[in-house]
Each structure stands twice: as C-alpha cells, then as structure tokens.
Amino acid sequence: MIIRFVDICISIVGIIFLAPIFILIAVLIVLGSKGGVFYLQKRVGLYGQIFTLYKFRTMTTGADKSGLLTIGNDSRITAIGKILRKYKLDEFPQLINVINGNMSIVGPRPEVEEYVNLYTEQQREILKVKPGITDLASIHFSNENEILGKVDNPRVYYIEVIMPAKIDFNMEYIKNPTLKNYFKIIFKTILKIFR
Image 1 (cartoon, rainbow, N blue to C red):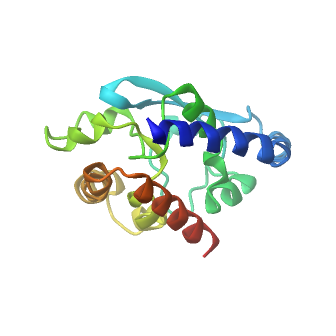
Image 2: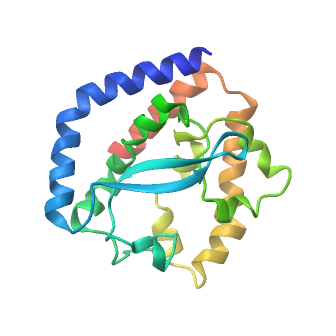
C-alpha cells in the first residue's frame, strides 16, 4: 500500500516538473519524422491482464510490423529516438500507466503477450506483481539491443538467454519488495543512465 502511495506521488511530481521537457520532446518527435508523439503497445500486466503501455515514439511509424526486437543500430530508430532511448526518456510517459494503476515505478518490465506465452509455470510468478518502469533486469541489460546485434538469431537468443535471465533478476525483487529495495533500484537506474 505504501509503495502505491509513493508511486503516485513520484508520478505526479514527475509529470509536473518534467512537463516542459515532455513538450520539447513531443515537438522534436513530430518535426523529426512522420507519425504521432506516442507509441502505444499492448503488454501483459498484473495477473496476466492486458493493458496499453505508453512510450514516446522512437521509431518510424509501423516499425513493429517488421519485428518486436530492436537489434543493434536499428535503421527504424529515428534520430531523436536514439537520444531518447540512450537516456531512457522514451519511458517517461509510463508515469501515466503508474497513475492509472497498470504499473509501478519499480517492478518487472512488462512483456508482450507473444513472449509471456512462452513462460514456464514458475516464470509466471512475476505476473503476481505489478510491472514497472524500471527493474534490476533493465539495469543489467541496458545494452540489450547491442547484445542482440551481435548474435546470429536475435529472437531465439532473446527467448533462450536474455528473457530467462531477466526473469531471474526480477525474482530477486519479488522475494523482497521492500521500500528500501524500491528506492535502491531507482537509484541504480539513475546512476546507470548518467554513466
């Protein structure tokens, strides 16, 4: 209950103070390529419920039709999109998801249904907590697209290597979802971004 309260407080304060930056980002996205400001995607949330995740659009319109994974120096990523992705600014609209109750600031990153359908019964345990904007897996795999760009079959590598490793990291937080660990992960995320 306390984490939900902190989630809402951080999200409201974040949206208010970052509003000028959001407006600037929105203008740059519109000027940089054809399409809308936001990218909306269906993800799997708490107890397997499907919800709409919000992001700033970083790729050309319709890019997801040619594959869900972003691999290496993906040509579908726009010029402003590269900057947004580097500093994780594309994730900020998910503060709306947090206020709506779909997500938390900290929790397992929500996956698309295609990959969740491949979870084992044990792996589905992570669906018993709200997905989050950041988690230990996001910190560890901050260069995921670079990793995938170096393998022969990115989709298979993601399913067989990266996805299980991400779930293992998330299990650590699920076992001890305290306020202390919550802020610890936020702090680690900020450090990772600025490094």
